[in-house]
Image (cartoon, rainbow, N blue to C red; front, side, top):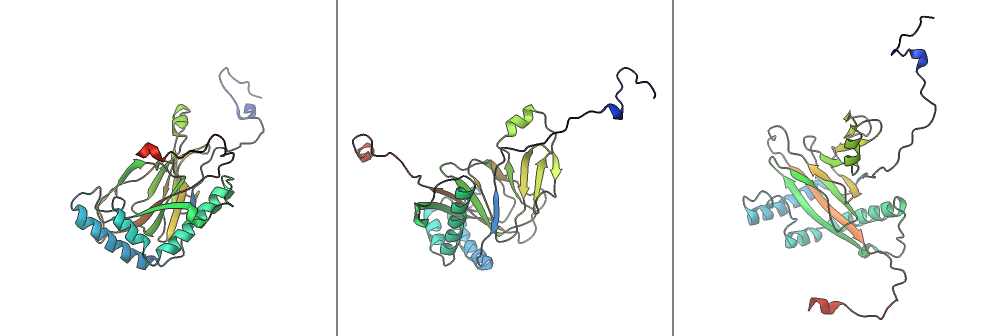
Length: 253
């Protein structure tokens, strides 16, 4: 056998130990499809956004959405499809918080679940900066009319720890259909979803996410229509009979 020079390691001297790689601390994102008439909803959302555009003019931060207009959100809630939308989204939410997070839900009704929803329509180069949603437990988006040109992008909540470990990221496109994961075998730093029409996503509200701007000219008749929403519910309170009962309403007087 040829002697090994100092500083050289041969293949036969490679000695990794046997063991198991365990993956922990993942963040769940749910992807599903709503049983609704998406084309009819597309038309009705278009009419709502036209009202927002007339109201807000050239203000590109407000003229593409009903988020800032309570009356337009209430008008959407009165549309013929909204009740089915609310039922399906709330029932999915309850299933997730029960099965994924182990929360007690048997004391709740659908009306105990707060659903705050607003419509969005992109017709030109537009982006939504990085943000998360406060005062809610889970957030989501229903894609009435999607496009392969403009995904929704999520960042890992563990991103700072990945930087300290100097992980090297690369696109992983075959991990989930319709999504590009950016990361490595140990962890993910980003995921870009390219949803189909009618699909919706639900995620913990603390997740940072954004809609990046399209990197090329917007196609003629471009339309990206979505309904975003937040969900939360009241928690069951045990041992709430301590102290002398008193209303705190006077604090607002």
